[in-house]
Image 1 (cartoon, helix red, strand yellow):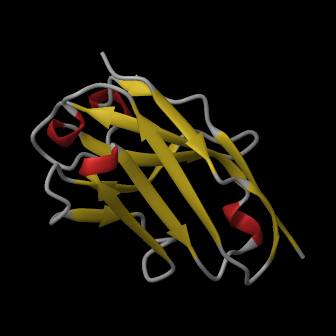
Image 2 (cartoon, one colour):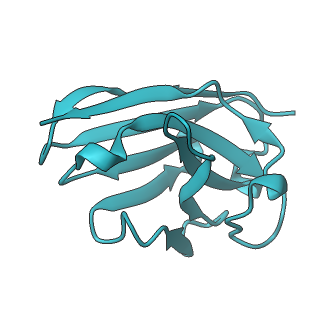
Length: 124
């Protein structure tokens, strides 16, 4: 079992930056693929980015590629999402999730553990 707690969300102007953090409990954090998902009002939850156990493999949604960077610190049981050049359409609740799958999956069903989410609001 792993528990995930997100932080770092907030209100930011378009073009600005935010850094989300996800702190995980448990001693096997480095065995989980970690993902960031987001859900905007009236829309389905979607993958933003995911990272492998080692951190060497990452994947991004096309809409954030080049603007967002995922990273992890296994010593601190934490995964990060650096978000730059934020756009209005990035407004959503951002969720951290953990998967025991060996691949860096973009499928929600592959992620067994979820945080409660943190709100990111981008204003004009």
